[in-house]
Image 1: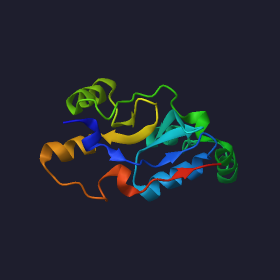
Image 2: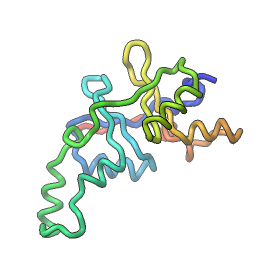
Image 3: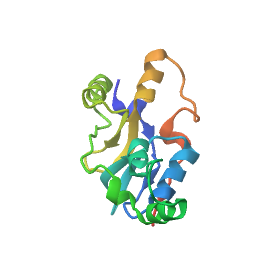
Image 4: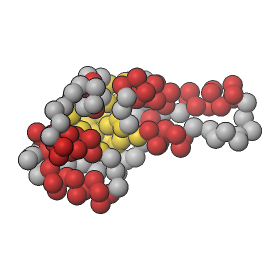
Length: 152
């Protein structure tokens, strides 16, 4: 089986200039845990729900709620995204992609074609749907929730 047969096509993306609260809201609304970051139409990074949580002020901060909110509103995705992104290709063997996910201890990765264009996202959930023989559904398939990009 090829990655292109299992991946979620047309993933929701975000620009590096997008504000962190906007990216967090988009992820919460769409029920997704990772956003490929596109700059100039090219994949330049990825931001995950974990990256967002780590960027948030801790509960023990000495900042007031207003100060914390004001500071957070100024932070962009580009400041917290991971620039080194593990990717795969739509023609890659799905078993090899699963091995890559395990090796890097990640839950998903962008799928890019030969031209470097983002064409989808492959997640552990996509692989499990195939393994379990469960048909995909729009509520469980991360990329089929609609293609959208958040800009600054």
